[in-house]
Image (tube, rainbow, N blue to C red; front, side):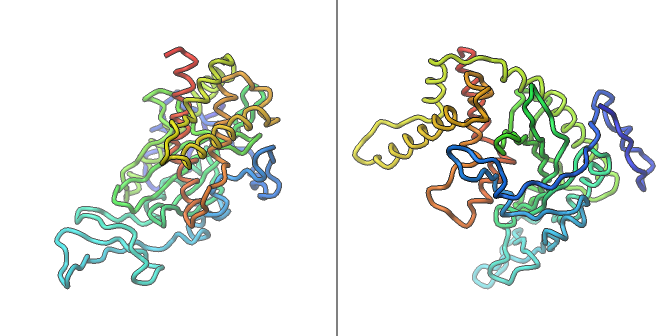
Length: 355
């Protein structure tokens, strides 16, 4: 592990001076493009394992400005008056996209104090992180109907007990009224292409954080330093937490209890037959993935095996009803929010620990 020097910046402060001494960064390997969809590892359950970003993003150059341009998310956000019955609504404005025609260009209604930060401006600080060698941008795109645009950046692979895991950092500039740039770390299991937004169960190592919109070069450096601090701390602690899960055994009764808790089946009534059928199907799918997937065999009977099986289901399960926003929602859940996976991790650990 080595700490790299940051390139010279217009400001006299070296960004490395802002990085805590205990945070170190691995050197980046040569970039290898992601595999085509039809070459991704198959399983007995899922024909193709994809994560959602493949259909809502573009493979881009490792430069923030070029990435935003190549993904066609360099449109501007413009404020417009909100008119009701011919009169403007006091203190309310509509954020609209410059690339869409009137009537389909409204992103969000915001208050008068909301400050618009354009995509290139809000994500400019990520270039400092790229220049440090900590991450490489692979893709860029948008989700939530354009309310958020993102840069998907890859960090060096981590190998834990023979398991290859790829960390990704998703940087999002949001126009939904939050006024924040969000960043989230999600790891992807190489053997299954499954998203694992693992919680490290510590307030000092969150996997998701928000940075207030910034404009000045000094603010960009501070945002980059804060992000690097979070990323470095998370990735330093991650192998220990995952290693413990890999070597924590789970009994058959515990597996049964965990399965029932992850996929509860409601009491059947006259009015919920579909819900009961869907719940049974979901549990059966999980049991098949856990019991039949070759790349999970060595982790059978461990916390890690159960968590990876659940991740496989959440990451790759086909929708009962395909919608226009399905890939966007899958990406947001897999790579950013991660609420389903964090809930599963909490349930598994509570049962194993006898809580």
